[in-house]
Length: 89
Image 1 (cartoon, one colour):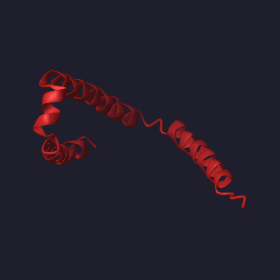
Image 2 (spheres, helix red, strand yellow; image 1 turned 120 degrees about the vertical axis):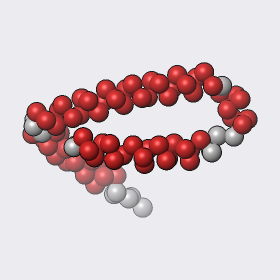
Image 3 (cartoon, helix red, strand yellow; image 1 turned 45 degrees about the horizontal axis):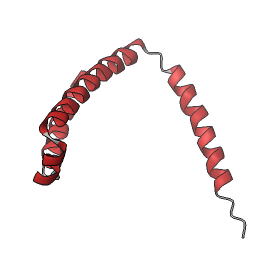
Image 4 (cartoon, helix red, strand yellow; image 1 turned 30 degrees about the horizontal axis):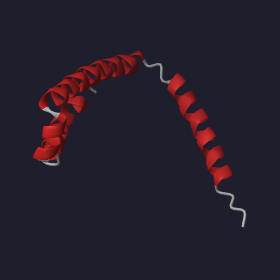
């Protein structure tokens, strides 16, 4: 599993490089380098903690709770979609 997370690094880095091109110099001047650096560091730290937690959670093998959550959420979504598709003309 750790290997699959490592395989995602080039994809994420590549998409980040392509996304930097979307920032024009005017936008970068308005936002500033400080807030972008803080956002980058904060997202890196929270992502790293999230990945560590996810690997630990999956290693414990307690996925029954997640399965029950998925079934309940699916039932709710289907219920709301069915109710929303009725069109009164």
